[in-house]
Image (cartoon, rainbow, N blue to C red; front, side):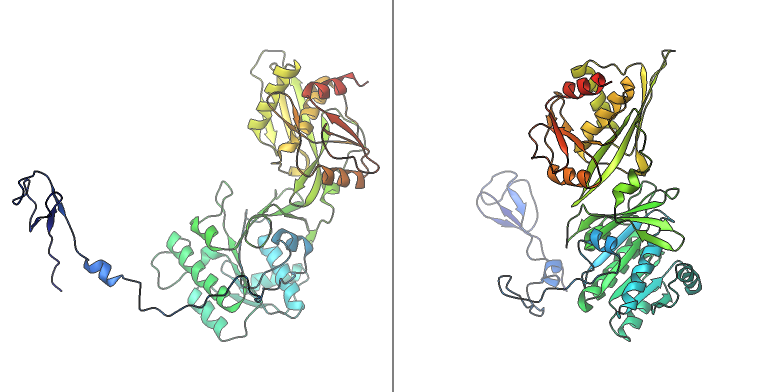
Length: 455
């Protein structure tokens, strides 16, 4: 095909020239010739306005078939998903090595297979015999799971096309999969994106619930391209310290439910066990009153979880630079709260080392924890134990005001159910729950006076 000819059009008179020149030959104006490229070969070959097959639209305001959720047999897993597994959805689960991702998915696969569904578990990191050993340890050796060890996406999709459509397909992990149509080693950006696209397309077309296990980097984010999180419907993070017994399954992205629900599990010898009342897990060992300990009713989605906040104040005599250490909370927010206590309440932490810890390894992001943290800090500074049957919640502003927070009634209801008799929070909060005495606080100095004045 002949190369298209260029032409230059004068912006003043409209004259046409075959090459650019400083002055227009027709009107004599300078620097008015601008290239006017006709339709190029690229645009002609990539014109997508015709040649395709028509697609069918479904009116949203007319009745249609809605996918029915499928229970996994583990209520905490279903809670984190927003109510269960959605057919045709793609779920990406990340977590630190050894946290229990494969164990949890093997238990889910066994429950679905035992209930009559077809579960397919494809492992790219372990041999089939190794997965079988783990299943025997978990007591799942008799579950009718279709197990395979493969890394080729072409082989996996070809095999799945020759068998009945499964209810659940687990790929462990997506970083080990590879496609022979893409150059690069498994785990590269192009391979992860291409393999995930083919697997997600199969799940959408056949109504299969797809679960992809993802590796994480040193900072805890899911490895691979960020577009992988955009491609899937649900992104879940399995959190927890391997030295601790509990695990938290947190939903980061969910197209079919809320993104702030959590599921709490306990790692035992027979696998992951559900924790129906996580508040009792984080409040164990609180029989005797101790200075620097406050209970905060946190909200994780629709579930209230009571956690213990511990503070320790160490006074320095040598004049060394004091240290501030925070575990389970935002260190910047604690620095702000210490500044408010010094500026608005007259307390001095300049010659003290401050240590703050959320018991049980729990991580808080709720701004309503400000009041509980302040109560723990003031209690530790004055060596005044707080009441063991009291909870504290409220947001603290830079002016020292106690601001209202969301779900105050739910927090009080859960506290009363667990045997707490007192609650301290914003003064304009809701009516107290039955069996719970509520004390409203307007300013942070009111909190300091209440704590330090108690005998």
